[in-house]
Length: 251
Ligand code: PEP
Image (cartoon, rainbow, N blue to C red; front, side):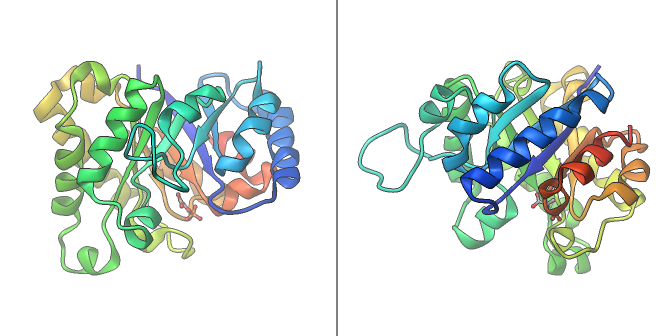
């Protein structure tokens, strides 16, 4: 059985004290979430160390939002996978569309990042998704397929045990426009098929594929009821503990 996951992506929001308070509120309310739903919070690098203390011993797992594509050395301003692992960070998001769009993150760089993250014992939430122009040109299946093939086809079935995929249509991120459950489901099913083609049906069945893009308490239930949607990657709504927990309770 694949895991149901609700992961919050805080992006570049909250100061450290505010982040600690938000993490505490999520931990406090986490008991009200069904025990088979995994809660993850992905926080800015500065927050990882203190938030690790807050989530310690709770049902909430800690994630980073990115990591470097180099192991260590003279890369000013970067944060390595080993550094993340050293503060008890369990996951890292990689390939978020904001990284791809604003920081030149390519599939080639992502292969290096995923390799380093896995080598350091981190689990990866790999984001894929088409932009508006690609959706309007009817290229969404092709774009998502290529992103999966370019990155994940460089890994093994064993590696896939530590990889979660997040489908995030760029046109739905932070815009208030959500993909309909049917639009999301058809891409999720396509991603699962692309995974099955390389790794076999069992690995594809066991890989969690999350939906992200203006997911909120009012639409989560409908999205999560789709057979190939295994939870959500939540941006804006993850900044309010009540909304984040309400989304997780939608299961
Ligand atoms: C995200 O950035 O991962 C995301 C899904 O954002 P939002 O929920 O705000 O659309």
